[in-house]
Length: 173
Image (cartoon, rainbow, N blue to C red; front, side, top):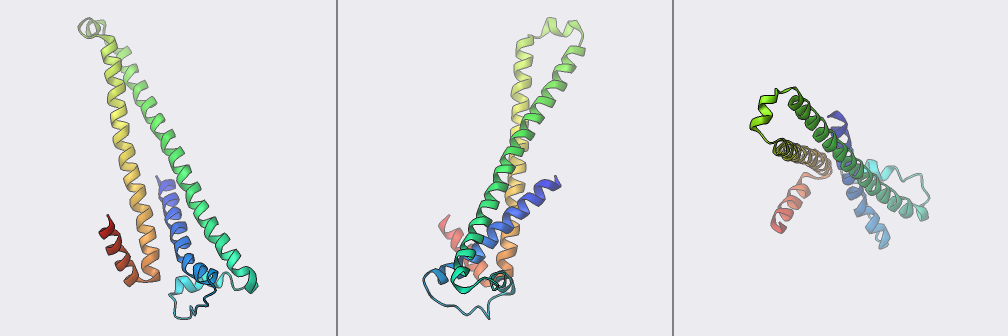
């Protein structure tokens, strides 16, 4: 639900922030000073966070921020996988329980016509298929939400570079 939206938006945001900070960090790492006075507002705000840090430690703190953003994104991804697995098990268990409860309420005539083992096996396979479909929809939604947040951040940095990088990624795929 809304937790998934928040988690995936944060994941996309951390992914975008880490990418946005890479360029200045790489330039500083190679000793190339850069004038970011004309940089987009988002990049300037990100870089202004490091203005309080002394010059020699600025690169280290920026790299630490990039690593922290990547770690936070991966932690959110791990939490998403764990929550998804728990949701899948809950769905399968709940649906199977309801189906078996319904079978217990059916009259004895039904069982004389049907084999109980086949019924239980079919319930299990149908529930697994349904949950697989639900998981796929959840994963697609999560991926779209993460991508949308990431693309929105990239567009706020530079819509021209976003288009070029989008075309480049399509060419690679």
